[in-house]
Image (cartoon, rainbow, N blue to C red; front, side, top):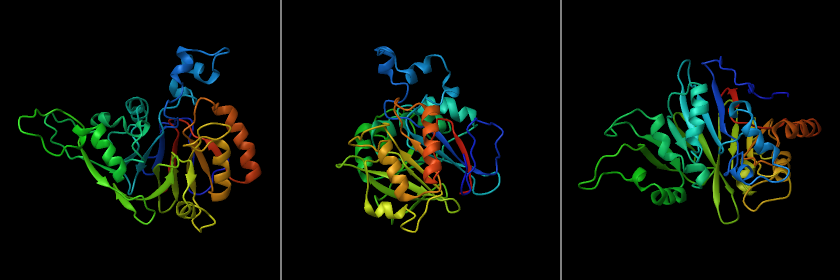
Length: 326
């Protein structure tokens, strides 16, 4: 597949990568229930689900149809030898993603966290952040900055009160928990913020008509937009990431839940491809897939689509690492 912009691709998990360049690592490319869908394995259909049953015979690191919750790790290298690791979303499968991909790519820590929203598949791994922080029995460590909107903050105070609490109450025991420095960001393309030296612009989108979720754009040399949970573009956001609005993306990473039909809270493939045609990025990767997608088969279909439309589009897979000049 032809590569455009300043992006090169490595789908075969080559461990001998260059240490002087930034990279994007797809830690997870699946929907909230992840793939395999457990239901397909405990209550198999007749015939059984082919994509889910592959997981019983092919090890996950060799199975592009094994998908954890959607999450992206940005390995940002602002200067030779310097690396900052910025994590977008920390879902239910975070621990598994650390075991599989942090070990493989030798990622020693997380320097900052950016959250798209507060649903289970974006935040329920937050307790495991302590695994990627320095060890201290009395929590005497520098907290990791975590960027999120006010709605997500209110929800996380309820879900994880012990991660939000600033000071121990009288008589309360010290327990070793993840140390986080909560930073509120706006649902607004005009309010950029900086995480570990990299500037991000929030991209508010609808995730169901009653809910605003954030995507993010980042990268000065290569313009990237990451939009993991979307049912409809807000006009202002669409202008901000479209060629028509004068902001052509080098790389768009976009939600696609099912292959056919539509869904009330997510793009499905027809809406995803329609949006890509409107936005005209130089290249796109799709994420958030259910077990309906078969990696190799559907990428063949997308290859034909890409030739016709002139925009290279592929399904991403867990562990995909893309060197990139940010």
